[in-house]
Length: 156
Image 1: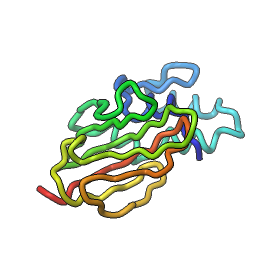
Image 2: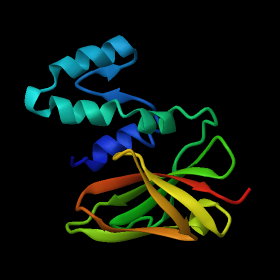
Image 3: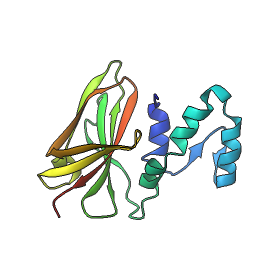
């Protein structure tokens, strides 16, 4: 499922925590009404994006920190990070605003994690990707797409 960078920007590191679907959505009832107005062909994919529990948990994390650019500022490929509650937990978004697929790497040093092993989970796919040392690379982030990860360091 392809995710538009603007949807992701608005939802994930939702610095304003507002989703707009032809109107301001302020309650669960508003979201339900707005979802029913989405074209049927787009409904399932859009609903999956907007109701992804792991992604919403990033936005609603009790620590309340905002996401920020940690690498690639002003380029077509950016790494965003958000400190989350828990010890050494980060949400990371790898944005590719370029016209072609690109490899994007996040280094633990960029996101404030200690050197060593950390587990990586793809929040959009809901899959654990494994343990990696000091960095993680997505070999092909599609053009105008984003990969969203949760990274947890094994070090205290």
